[in-house]
Image (cartoon, rainbow, N blue to C red):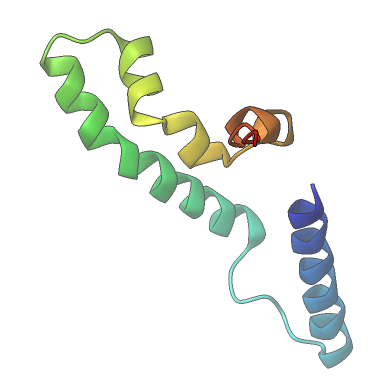
Length: 89
């Protein structure tokens, strides 16, 4: 969660600096975000399509390719599930 807050804070700081300098951002925010989303989803299309053509089910392919984590990042609720269990002894 700290990473998300730091990202938003950095964005706000850059926005304030742009505002003080009276500079417009280089790309409209919606266009930039849609472009990034397209890149993230596009990276997953080829491997997923190949596995589907090989006869695997969509849910199995998505789980195997870890598409959800790649596109959405490791969500805060999943952080504990991804951590390695503590070693004893």
